[in-house]
Image 1 (cartoon, one colour):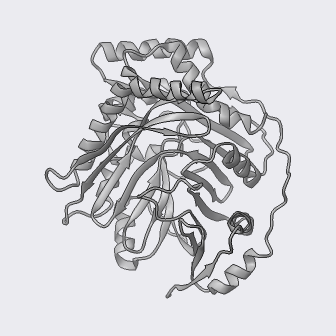
Image 2 (cartoon, helix red, strand yellow; image 1 turned 60 degrees about the vertical axis):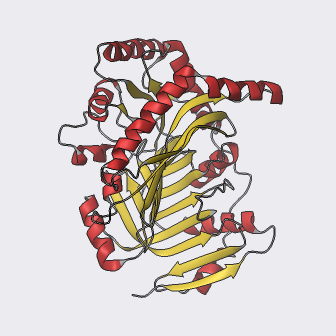
Length: 428
């Protein structure tokens, strides 16, 4: 079936209303994915926001090979996720001892009935649809204004690992580093709430208002929801060029402009954060090299400092040119899970993560995004996110940080809690 495509002008000042209309209309569908750049346009940005609605075909991909073959045959849009535990299918030495509680499959992509994109200037809405016409979709948006001013419930989260055991685990991980088992390991903790009665759209709107991020996402897959405020890109492809932007290094925003500038400069000069960042940059370079032309991998930016509502982040950019004889999915295969959420060396630290963490990561530290008809793609790193199962009413998040030998347990606890603060604040 051929897609119908139409473009509509967005009147000045109307974009924010249109975004609300689009999201509210999507609620009637059992599957949709909304991606929001929150006006963080840069030279890599394609769209201000995207919305994929409805599964035209319920495709049960289990592997990257199946996805690659379907795309080669159909050359159409795909949207979906790869959960952290897909690592077990990519590497036979890995396994997971914790059960996933949110209901997300390890690997899931859908072929959307409707794809809506807004350009970075917020002046044009393009609707691509199967069956229903783009004009019918556009008219439907206009009668779908959401309720404003909804008060969210007051919720308390329980930490899966409390403070003292957390501090002890950091020391244990530092001993692994001292013994040469690894150089850096990303260690995370779950905050959770049982019997939480929430409206996911209202939660996403609140989170997106408190923590607007360049890779925000709101995702429904049947009764499983994700509300994401991620600042991090995992992997982007355009033509033969792939690039990744790992984050390592976090500093709290200052209380005023002077203190904020000091915090930013301290992060820029931090030996520990630079060491963490450069280790992950080297890991990403090695990952991308496995599917790239010889000598094509380069570091476009090292130790860039970027500012977000709650934190400053140290971000580097690595790019390469893929070999012509490999499928586009190889760039994912050889770099997933992303090094910023594992550590180095990858296989060993993922084994240690499973040993010392107390909950399945699920979608957390996985990725969500889209693949275009031309086999270009853009995927985020799923961090700073809330996950909800509407059937079991289980609500959770995970936060953590990179542990090196120089890590101080108390400071690692504080960094983990800083990242959790914006998520918990939605319900406080």
